[in-house]
Structure formats: C-alpha cells, structure tokens
Image (cartoon, one colour):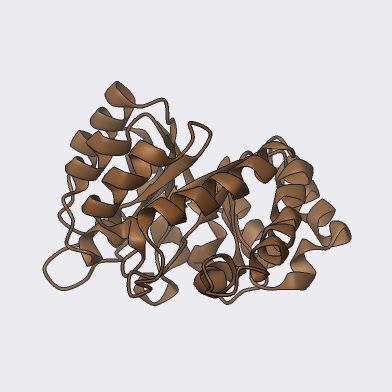
Length: 258
C-alpha cells in the first residue's frame, strides 16, 4: 500500500509551505488541500508542481476549499446557480491537469437539505462528473458526517445511480463520526474507491495520527488490497491532534511496513 500525506494536516499553512513540509517528511504521495482561490491560479499551480517534481512526489488528489459551500451552489433551490457551480469546479479540473493528478474530492450536500433527493443528488453529481471527464479527471465522492453520502442508506442509492466514472474517497474518521460501519461502506463502494483518508481513533478522540489509537490498519489495508483497485492511503489528521510533524513521518514509515 502506498502511504502519503495530505497538506490538510498542516492547515492553516499556505499550501505551498504545507506541500514542502509533506516532502520534507519523505512522502512520495500527497493530496493538495487548497485554501483559497488565488491558489488555483496557474502560476501558483506550477509552483506546486515544481515542488512535487523536485521531490519525486505524486499528487493523488485535490481537495476544494469550497467543499463547505457545495450544498449552496450545486444543490440550491435556485437551479440557475448549478451551471455557475460546475464552471467554478473547472478550476479544480484544470489544477488536476497541471498537477498530473486524477481525483477531485467532493463533499456534496448536507443531509438536512430535504428538497434534494438522492436521485436528484446523483443526477447533479453525474453532470459534474461528465464535465470533469472532459479534463481527463474524476469526481471522488467522500463520506462526510452530516452530508448525504456520509450514511449507508444514502450511499446505496448513490451507488446504484452514479455513473461508473464517479469514484469514492473513503475517510476513516468521517465514518467514525457518523457512527457508520466502516466495512459495510467499503463493501458497498469497493469498486469505486480511488484512495482513502486515514487517521486513528480511540474512546476519546477520532482524528489521531495513525497507530496512536486502536484501529486495525493491517486488516483495513488487507481489505483494500484484496477487494479494490485503490493503492494509496493518505494520512489526513487535524492539526490540533498532531504533537509533532515527525509523528506523521514515523506513522507513515510504520504503515508502509504493514
């Protein structure tokens, strides 16, 4: 299993600084978590690409800073906003082209938005996926607590209606926060998984550096390798739960040996 690091671990550092930290820790795989619109300008994107190339690092995915407003843009009651939202995400698709990566992580719609059925949800997701395909990239739906695709009952509809080119990012901490069975979700979406976000948890915290909690990573990696085509797991832990950057590097090395 390839083990990498998300720049999100170092939020609120500027993304180029965060990517340099990822490289310094020895990671050869990364996810870029954008923080603001100016980071999507081509000059900045080529700066990120230079950092990745210099350190022989592969960018697996990008994470939009606009995830928090996807509900209000893509799934608004005002349909005229949808095309604007899709055009906005073309910036991320272009970023993927420059960074030589394939996946744009998508949070989607809050569960509380009752006016959006899962049928309509996947219809919109398929539209976005079609536009992404024109750039040679994929939308990768993430399971996120309080979002529709964070829950198994909604994922069953998503999985039955989403086109084959819609992928899936599985996040351990989000499944724990949503009180969902990790392996039930994995078993459902296993043929869609593009990559996974990994963290650890115990009885008191759910965003720990891997191997600082109780999660069985050996079993998890075995399942991913035996049942999916995904080959990369990215450490994504919130900054407040990281005592030192070196802890992430140590975890990465130990996980690689599993």
